[in-house]
Length: 233
Image (cartoon, rainbow, N blue to C red; front, side, top):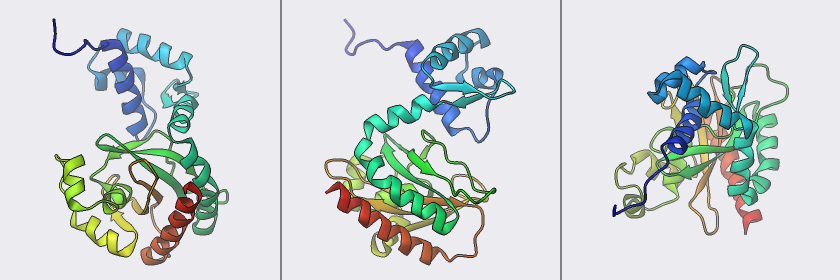
């Protein structure tokens, strides 16, 4: 008998397909996705049909693939209290700063977008879809999450990734800043959110350019994170 239970290859490929689509900067064709998965196009098509049935994947007018609304539903069920507490603050941040605001949560070795709000009056705001993920070691949200932990605790939980000096600085400032780390030309500012009974999360904004100073943005985010924490108890 095997030491561990067998895994479902189809399920694993479906989850991997969702990860690829969530991380993509633009919608993908079936051929592109099948290449990323390393499977024949017919196999990718069968996986996608199942994901579409559950609204986890949708297609645009050109037939290219996008993460579906079902992903946001799953994310909400995991961190419903955090999303509820954060949504008013995200809406205020998006309008005040004219930037896309979001909450990132810690999932394995990644930071995953839980909920996002784009400014209503801006035609140039960056999209940050729920379910989007990037390595926890990169970008202001991941740095902010790390800043809520001691270096020793970080090494215990994430032994394969170093505790960055930027995380120690963010611990003192209350916020982290990054440029060109996740996407070239994109900047982010984030502040940690302490979630009772769970790993820390991050309140963040993402933008291409702004006349506002990162220090001002960071101070605003830190205050917002404190208000969210107060609601979470």
